[in-house]
Image (cartoon, one colour):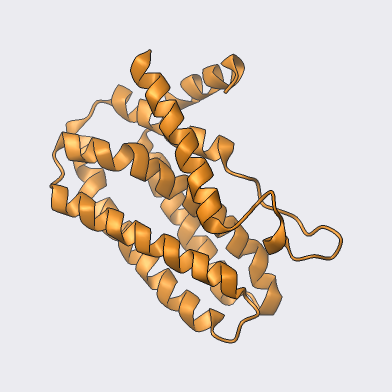
Length: 198
């Protein structure tokens, strides 16, 4: 990340609490889940791709910085472990849905079940992790955590566009969900190491 980008992240992180930011992302995720379910046929692609991107940003930041912080500030290990297991399962399901594609006859049914689990997971995080984070961390700590989420947003690929009539799902720059998750997670991990050293 360039010094200018780093300064931008530092200054913007002070403007928003990480819990507010994560709650806002939960709302965006829920809206995208609804859009995918409501869209007819192949028009599901665009909101589905945006959902993959947002989940990569959100879950990678949570995995690398939010869940470890929640453990440190007062959240029971079993609670954090359960959320991490749910996230791993969601990644696998998302990869399967990606491989299947919106045109597959089973996509809608499987996506509906996936969406229900994602919403339930988000509600459990809000109930069991976000409250303790607010109670047991300072505003400065939460602003720093918001920076990690912004780093994830900066490195996630933007919504791919259809090129030459091919499916946007085949766009190499975007890639399959697990590759997107890995890329974002690695960037957040690098940022965390750098911030711990400074």
